[in-house]
Length: 111
Length: 113
Image (tube, rainbow over the protein chains, first blue to last red):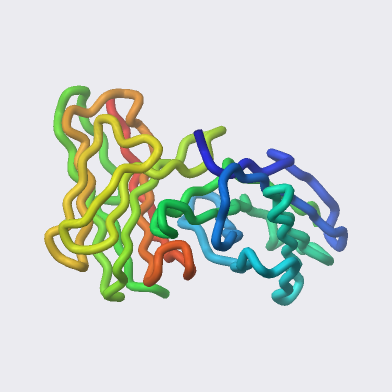
């Protein structure tokens, strides 16, 4: 089974609204990453948060990590139509060599 | 853009035939990964490599084998293709495993008929 599961599976919002997606994982991690995938393309790295960090910002992105609940959230503020994509969390295991991904959240931002 | 290329980009093959997908990098990254992406399953790890000749299994390794004889190339072989292996395959590279970002190739769309 996969390490991470994102929720919701799909999200549709209006441009300018905030989008929040969540990731839950199963085992202890060293860090957690978020990636974005535009339709049919390879994934692109967004942000990495380490297990000793609780919150991290990058531009319009805000990531939180709660290791006690084994969960993370990605907040995109003031969304744009160009943010339409699928978003995945990824965790490291197996001595931090193995990188496994969740099932993804498909975000649609309506202009 | 990170130097990572996958070949072929598209392939149609018949059930029971062997298929090899190639991932080539010019970044000299230690770690290389093969994933498959299917609707409803996200990305699932097939195999990964942490150095030349050093490989390990992922979540869905049955029916697949890999080889890494040099740093820049990571080959994924479907020993006897089945229709359930119809998927989009992505290769990724990383300098330090999960401690650093991974860079992805453009993907290979494989159809087994």
